[in-house]
Image: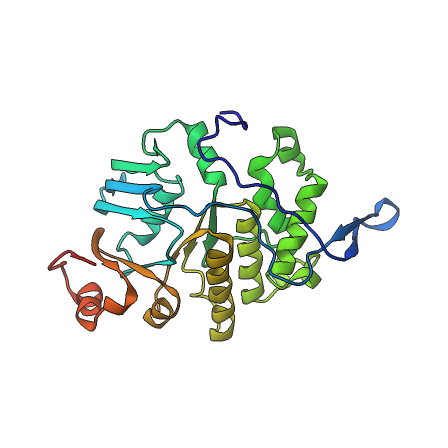
Length: 309
């Protein structure tokens, strides 16, 4: 698939950078070179002039998935996603939450049903089409998923690999515009001063913010966060959740976060999707996520009813 107007998941427009210049030195010794960048200064830097993902742009229609081992991960899941609401995904371990996220970003093809994205069924699409979609989906993981020996800036730049030509990808030769963009994103997440610090020397909260900046480097339409704060202390968890919420509100990016803490869900989510045994048990706002529903979700052996609001 080409990179022109035939792209069914067309990327947003480039970031406009502004602010005062800084200088960064690459390499060591006589081979070192310097570049000047202009970091954004003042208001929050938006990554794109996007149009909100409207209701119905992403639809799961009777999606089910069975792994080769015979494990039934999802059964008859039907729902739609948009950027109008910050969505929390909840349920017990093994309920199918991570499988659902991987189906949404095209890493897993469901064995049943359809996954519609702007009229394209990812479940039946060719690999090139799925790759185009995956470029538009940022992933944030519990254990960060950073390359530990690389700097924060280099990790953020990995989010641009899907947009580079094969020879640039092989050599990791990033255009100047991508390097400026990556620096602006590190400033946005509060880590511009740690741009050249190795990832394995950063704290857990800092690593997760680098991971979020890497996801933003893809210029995503959708961010999927799989237990993004489970490995963090309370203060770092709050910073990460505040950042994800701000991205959702200010950049018009859909966010789906797999969360364990119901307090966090109620503090940040506009919509809650609950899975139990691979089935959709609840889909509604957090204020109607009653104690009876949560008891059924976390303690019942089998779902007694399908609750939708």
